[in-house]
Length: 271
Image 1 (cartoon, one colour):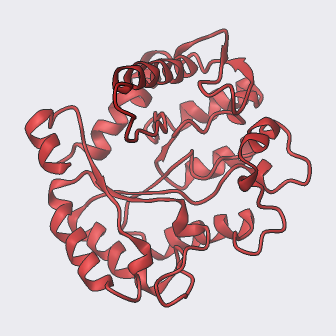
Image 2 (tube, rainbow, N blue to C red):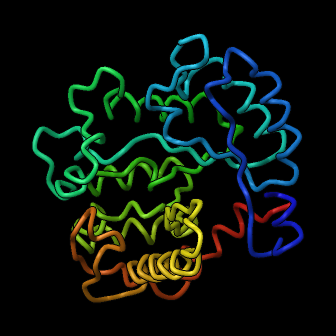
């Protein structure tokens, strides 16, 4: 993929590399060596949610953001000056006894009900692990996926953004229902920390359906951008899973320019 992007559109597309965490404790040295080899050509490292959700290595031991096996990975990212995009938590509704905004989403995906789970840690412990990781690794530029961990309140949004850069990754359902003047103030204070992301998932398509998939993806992206720029009510892009309507963020001026592109250029295109 790195080779294809370099030949296709190096000024428009950037790729992050992701380690296979199940290899930690096994063939981990080879995996780290491959990350080290690729990072000069990549935009950074991405850790998917399994890094904080109880993934186990091939020996059966649990791997988390604070596992000693990951310390060489942080050192590699710091040595190359590349950011690490990390997914550390899910929406609070997934742990609530009675979900609120995301009740319909949990009906569609009941496997995301984590309350009482013996395999998924508590949200509080996930956020503590993220905070401790950032404290231990000041040389690494971490980017918080989903606004740092799906903030559930305006104060949590402000605290997450105070930790460093964040990618919205479509984590706006709760934020768009917060008190708007309070949210606007937080966004302005963190104009250089926010990057817009759609969290669009692309996969293999059945033969003959590729064009339809591209059109649906384009609509999803357009709907996502509308959340950022619209002043009036907008529908969630994935309304089947989470049917809600809320005022758009109405980003404008330097804030709009930074969030919709400028910050990502600074973070992921620097050489």
